[in-house]
Amino acid sequence: MNFKEIASLALCSALALGGANQVAMAASPASDQVTKAAGVQAEPNITGVWERDPFPFDDDGDETKLVPPPGGGPDLKEPYASEWKALQEKRQAMLKAGTPLVDASTQCLPEGTPGIMEAIYPIQILQNPGQITVLAELFMQTRRIYMNAPFPEPDDLAPSYYGFSSAHWEGDTLVVQTRGVQQSVKFYDIPHSDAMTVTEHYQLIGPDKLRLDVSVEDPEYLQKPYTFRWEYKRNPDYRIPEYVCDHRLDVINPDGTVSFGGAK
Image 1 (cartoon, rainbow, N blue to C red):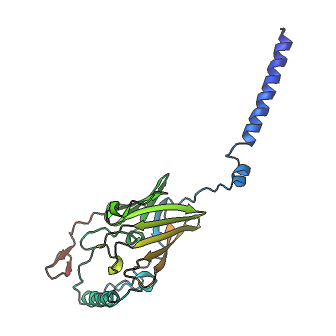
Image 2 (tube, rainbow, N blue to C red):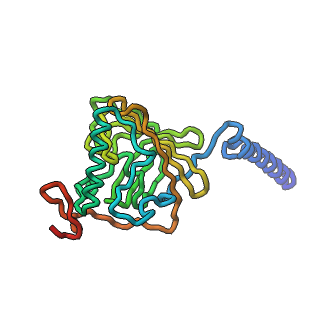
Image 3 (cartoon, rainbow, N blue to C red):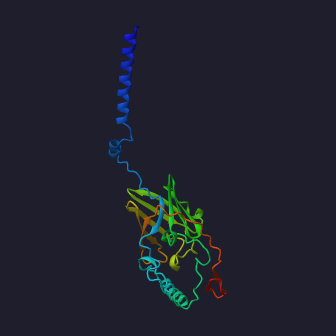
C-alpha cells in the first residue's frame, strides 16, 4: 500500500469516526431535545441560608406580648381546646408581669418539627442526593429529611424531636411527610398524639424566594388539619455562627417561672 492509499484510508476513517461522534452527541441524554422529549426536569435548588420574609417576630417591639401561632392557631377538640386556651392566657399574664413561664426554649430543648422551620434565627438547607439536611442557627439544631425513604413500621419508629421525614419531588414541589414526633414536642404548646403527621410542601417562587405550606393532621386532637404558610428569602452573604444554649442568661425558678439576666 502506497502513501496515497494510506492517507485516503486515514481520511475515510476520520470522517466515519466524526460522523459517529455527531450521531452519538445528537443522541446524548444530556441534550436539551432528548431531555424535554423524555420529560426529565431538573430538581429546583433549595440549598442555601434562608431567613423568614417578612421577619415576623419584632413588628412592634413589645416583648410582653406572646407571639401568636401561625395560621390563627389550631382547631382543637375538647377538652384540649379549653386547656390550650387557658395555658396561653396564663403565659400572657405571667409574661406581662415579668415572670414568664418556663418553655422548651428556656430549657434549651430542640424545637422539633415543624418548629425548626419557623426560622426564628436563619436556617441552612443542604440538598444532596438521597438527603436534605436542615441546620438551624438556634441551638445548632440538625434535621434530616430522607428522599424516597419508606417509613419504619410503627413499632420500629422511635419517637424523636424531629420525627422521621421522608420526601419526594412532585414536579417543582418538594413534598415532605413526617411521623414519629414525640409528644413532649409542643409547637406553640399545641398537644398532639403519636399519630400526628406533618406534611410540608416546599416551592421556589423566585430565584431566592421559598414558600412552605404546612399541614398538621392529628385525628385524636384536631377537629381538622392545622394549616399555615411561611415564606423565606435566601441570604447568600450570611454565615451561621455557633449558638450554644447554656443557661447563662436566665434562671429557671422552682415555681416554673424564668428570671432573665441571671437574677433570682
